[in-house]
Image 1 (spheres, rainbow, N blue to C red):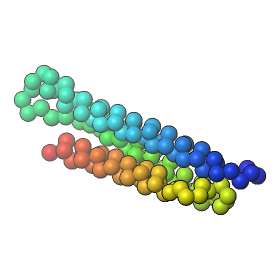
Image 2: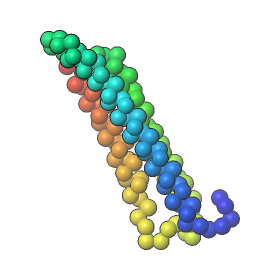
Image 3: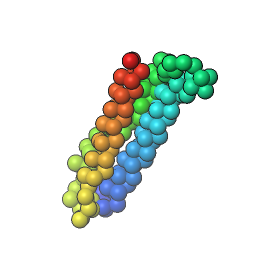
Image 4: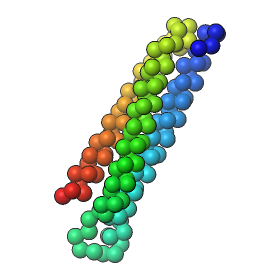
Length: 123
């Protein structure tokens, strides 16, 4: 930790967390697109009983899980970092837990999306 007590240290850490959230959300979105791409191709060919391709589903779900893990690990590391901040480095009158709740919720939504895609393609 630096010798100076500066509340900007926390804001730099929060920017890093939000950058990881943005990256994780992009990977989750890419995973959803990949998971549904096989179904889209079959619908274009007008196949009867079009279902999603298992390969694209597995790769897509893997990307969704990777994005969710990135967001979850970033939130965990941010929490660990914030616990080590001195009181002078913590911004006054600022809700420090909002970004952690947001990141945690996004990770859970990503996991739920992965479970949904797996269940819908196993039918």
